[in-house]
Length: 429
Ligand code: AMP
Image (cartoon, rainbow, N blue to C red; front, top):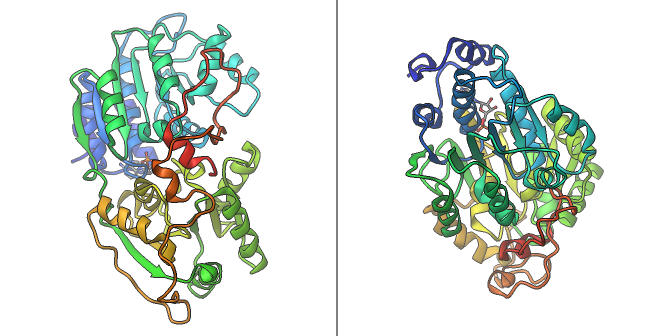
């Protein structure tokens, strides 16, 4: 199948060809036609499948065909969980709309709102936003969503995990009730299905990869290793394997910092990216990782969400995630858009339950390889870790959560957020 056969306009085909895409990815083939028909779409797709173009291209086409109003009200609203993802989506929109008269911008928290407000005042057709900043500007009367024709909820599962459900509900209340809705999610929990049912009308379901299964192009391996030897092992893998670009996941922000320091001491160019890092540091780390001046990016799940790093060869789970869906998200950073990649999990005995949960979710027994000199003590405890974000908290009653608020602004007069249990589980990330 070619992009020509999807019914896209010449201006869009030109932009796609300039990007160097020759064939539409599976999610693009499946999602673009129903979106062009004006239908609601519920798509199962993770980052790396080409989903951004899957919704951006048809939206651009619909908006450029529609009537251009002199005032240029916001006609398409794209909600995303993280600033990085928001910025990436805008960058894609700009590229795809190069040959169209469409204006787009992005708003997110953590930076001065004034330049964003100035942009909005000039008239914007497509707005990409994280929920917190959008609500702030809405409350200040600086933004009107009364003319929105298309709503996109991108990475809906992560938005719920990050406690944005009430924000989403509040934003939806101020949108026109007649609109087209598109929802993208990598995983489909009961909560996601409930959210979808409340927002979408007779949606067309499209799937890039089967639900909660991992991409075939990814070689997955589990290395059993004594907990105290994980740092030594990852340094050995990077240096002896001469790895040039590796994304490493830790469970906590503190863990990310500690590992980064050890890597730097071992001569590996590394940086950490997590919720305690300012926007400047996060952008710098990501840019360094993309241009090759950094070898390793050490990230927590929330910070890494939605990062678009094409053709990433290696992903390492320094610690297994205690939320099994995160495993699918993490390894989705490799083997992207048809390229093969390797996802390695360093697995210590106290993570036995996490591994079992992951294997249950993906429906696979992950291949185990032992590395001589690093094997864990066969008698080591298999009890889950007690400190940090241990599994014990999964079923406990949430205490007052300390959420990663990197995308949030405290100035939210819509009232307090009700913390989800997931916030509690993720509070240390
Ligand atoms: P996404 O899943 O939207 O984050 O896209 C992942 C990566 O795939 C991005 O770097 C896109 O530029 C790239 N991409 C999107 N569509 C295509 C396509 N049809 N062919 C090749 N690469 C693509």
